[in-house]
Amino acid sequence: MSFSEIRKFLKQMQSEDNLRKEVTSSATADDVALIAQRLGYSFSGDDLLRFNGQKVDKVTVRKVDHPGEYH
Image (cartoon, rainbow, N blue to C red; front, top):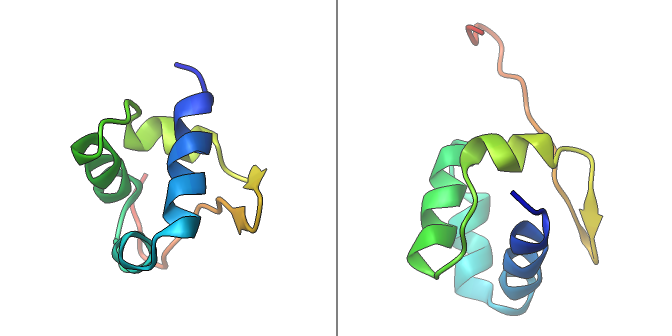
């Protein structure tokens, strides 16, 4: 998997208000990946988590650990 798909998706997200709202209201990386797949991008929630800490323009991908989350 190349991170280029994630970068393209994040650039599109920054330019579309409705997409940005949908992504920012998503609960999991898998939810975000499903949104991206509907738009023709090819990456998984795991791929997105591996992208943690990377920045694309104004967006920085961050994994959020929730209290009580099981690993």
